[in-house]
Image 1 (cartoon, rainbow, N blue to C red):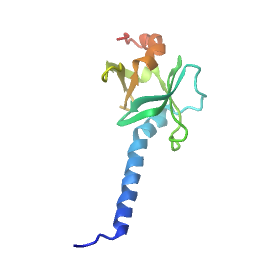
Image 2: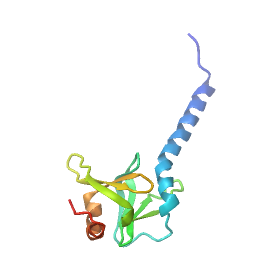
Image 3: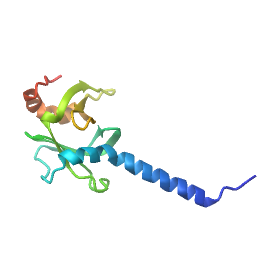
Image 4: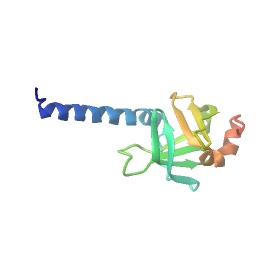
Amino acid sequence: MSHTPQWIYIVFLTFSTIVMIFLFRHDWNRLAKLYRTKEPPPQNFFRMQSGSVGLVHYKGTLNVGITPQGIYLSIFPLLGLGLTPLLIPWSAIRKIEPANQLFIQRFRLYLSSPKVKLILSKDILEPGKEFLATQGFEWI
Protein backbone atom coordinates (compact mmCIF):
# COMPACT_ATOMS: atom_id res chain seq x y z
CA MET A 1 0.00 0.00 0.00
CA SER A 2 1.58 3.27 -1.10
CA HIS A 3 1.25 6.53 0.74
CA THR A 4 0.63 9.74 -1.16
CA PRO A 5 2.78 12.60 0.10
CA GLN A 6 0.76 15.24 1.95
CA TRP A 7 2.10 18.04 -0.23
CA ILE A 8 0.10 16.66 -3.17
CA TYR A 9 -3.12 17.23 -1.22
CA ILE A 10 -2.03 20.76 -0.35
CA VAL A 11 -1.22 21.53 -4.00
CA PHE A 12 -4.56 20.10 -5.13
CA LEU A 13 -6.50 22.07 -2.50
CA THR A 14 -4.66 25.29 -3.38
CA PHE A 15 -5.24 24.82 -7.11
CA SER A 16 -8.93 24.01 -6.55
CA THR A 17 -9.35 27.12 -4.41
CA ILE A 18 -7.77 29.34 -7.06
CA VAL A 19 -10.02 27.88 -9.76
CA MET A 20 -13.13 28.39 -7.59
CA ILE A 21 -12.21 32.01 -6.85
CA PHE A 22 -11.68 32.64 -10.57
CA LEU A 23 -15.06 31.13 -11.45
CA PHE A 24 -16.75 33.00 -8.60
CA ARG A 25 -15.44 36.34 -9.84
CA HIS A 26 -15.44 35.84 -13.62
CA ASP A 27 -18.93 37.03 -14.66
CA TRP A 28 -19.06 39.69 -11.95
CA ASN A 29 -15.77 41.17 -13.18
CA ARG A 30 -17.02 41.13 -16.78
CA LEU A 31 -20.02 43.17 -15.66
CA ALA A 32 -17.84 45.47 -13.55
CA LYS A 33 -15.88 46.55 -16.63
CA LEU A 34 -19.05 48.22 -17.93
CA TYR A 35 -21.30 48.78 -14.93
CA ARG A 36 -19.09 49.46 -11.90
CA THR A 37 -20.55 52.16 -9.66
CA LYS A 38 -19.49 54.21 -6.68
CA GLU A 39 -23.08 55.23 -5.96
CA PRO A 40 -24.38 54.38 -2.49
CA PRO A 41 -27.12 51.74 -2.28
CA PRO A 42 -30.52 53.12 -3.27
CA GLN A 43 -33.42 53.56 -0.86
CA ASN A 44 -35.22 50.66 -2.51
CA PHE A 45 -32.61 48.10 -1.40
CA PHE A 46 -33.04 44.42 -0.56
CA ARG A 47 -30.26 42.93 1.58
CA MET A 48 -29.16 39.29 1.86
CA GLN A 49 -31.16 38.03 -1.13
CA SER A 50 -30.59 34.98 -3.29
CA GLY A 51 -30.01 35.25 -7.01
CA SER A 52 -27.61 34.38 -9.77
CA VAL A 53 -25.08 36.37 -11.73
CA GLY A 54 -23.83 34.26 -14.60
CA LEU A 55 -23.05 30.76 -13.38
CA VAL A 56 -22.74 31.70 -9.71
CA HIS A 57 -25.72 31.49 -7.36
CA TYR A 58 -25.46 33.88 -4.42
CA LYS A 59 -27.58 32.35 -1.69
CA GLY A 60 -28.44 34.98 0.90
CA THR A 61 -25.42 37.16 0.03
CA LEU A 62 -26.71 39.28 -2.85
CA ASN A 63 -27.87 42.84 -2.22
CA VAL A 64 -30.20 44.25 -4.89
CA GLY A 65 -31.57 47.73 -5.38
CA ILE A 66 -33.97 49.11 -7.95
CA THR A 67 -33.40 52.64 -9.24
CA PRO A 68 -34.72 54.64 -12.19
CA GLN A 69 -31.27 54.12 -13.77
CA GLY A 70 -31.17 50.33 -13.37
CA ILE A 71 -30.48 47.39 -11.08
CA TYR A 72 -27.95 47.94 -8.32
CA LEU A 73 -26.07 44.79 -7.24
CA SER A 74 -23.55 44.22 -4.48
CA ILE A 75 -22.35 41.32 -2.39
CA PHE A 76 -22.47 41.08 1.40
CA PRO A 77 -19.22 42.88 2.36
CA LEU A 78 -17.59 40.03 4.26
CA LEU A 79 -18.04 37.68 1.30
CA GLY A 80 -17.55 40.14 -1.55
CA LEU A 81 -13.80 39.59 -1.79
CA GLY A 82 -13.32 42.92 -3.51
CA LEU A 83 -16.27 42.61 -5.90
CA THR A 84 -17.39 46.16 -6.64
CA PRO A 85 -21.04 47.24 -6.67
CA LEU A 86 -22.74 47.30 -10.06
CA LEU A 87 -25.46 49.48 -11.56
CA ILE A 88 -26.81 47.71 -14.63
CA PRO A 89 -28.93 50.06 -16.76
CA TRP A 90 -32.40 48.98 -17.83
CA SER A 91 -31.32 49.42 -21.45
CA ALA A 92 -28.75 46.61 -21.03
CA ILE A 93 -31.55 44.05 -20.60
CA ARG A 94 -32.39 42.43 -23.93
CA LYS A 95 -34.76 39.65 -22.83
CA ILE A 96 -36.68 38.52 -19.74
CA GLU A 97 -38.22 35.11 -19.13
CA PRO A 98 -39.67 33.25 -16.14
CA ALA A 99 -37.22 31.08 -14.21
CA ASN A 100 -39.51 29.80 -11.47
CA GLN A 101 -38.27 27.37 -8.85
CA LEU A 102 -40.80 25.47 -6.75
CA PHE A 103 -42.89 28.18 -5.10
CA ILE A 104 -40.57 31.09 -5.86
CA GLN A 105 -41.38 33.28 -8.84
CA ARG A 106 -38.13 34.37 -10.46
CA PHE A 107 -37.04 35.95 -13.71
CA ARG A 108 -34.02 35.36 -15.88
CA LEU A 109 -32.70 38.61 -17.35
CA TYR A 110 -30.43 38.36 -20.37
CA LEU A 111 -28.01 41.23 -20.73
CA SER A 112 -26.88 42.46 -24.13
CA SER A 113 -23.29 43.22 -23.19
CA PRO A 114 -21.62 41.27 -21.81
CA LYS A 115 -23.83 38.27 -22.45
CA VAL A 116 -24.46 37.40 -18.82
CA LYS A 117 -27.72 36.18 -17.27
CA LEU A 118 -29.14 37.41 -13.99
CA ILE A 119 -31.79 35.51 -12.04
CA LEU A 120 -33.75 37.55 -9.50
CA SER A 121 -37.01 37.00 -7.68
CA LYS A 122 -40.20 38.68 -8.84
CA ASP A 123 -40.53 40.42 -5.46
CA ILE A 124 -37.19 42.16 -5.96
CA LEU A 125 -38.00 43.20 -9.53
CA GLU A 126 -41.52 44.42 -8.70
CA PRO A 127 -40.43 48.03 -7.98
CA GLY A 128 -38.73 48.09 -11.40
CA LYS A 129 -41.90 47.17 -13.26
CA GLU A 130 -42.42 50.66 -14.68
CA PHE A 131 -38.78 50.99 -15.73
CA LEU A 132 -38.92 47.63 -17.51
CA ALA A 133 -42.10 48.75 -19.27
CA THR A 134 -40.26 51.76 -20.71
CA GLN A 135 -37.82 49.26 -22.28
CA GLY A 136 -40.70 47.39 -23.89
CA PHE A 137 -40.98 44.52 -21.40
CA GLU A 138 -44.47 43.67 -20.26
CA TRP A 139 -44.67 42.48 -16.70
CA ILE A 140 -45.25 38.76 -16.69
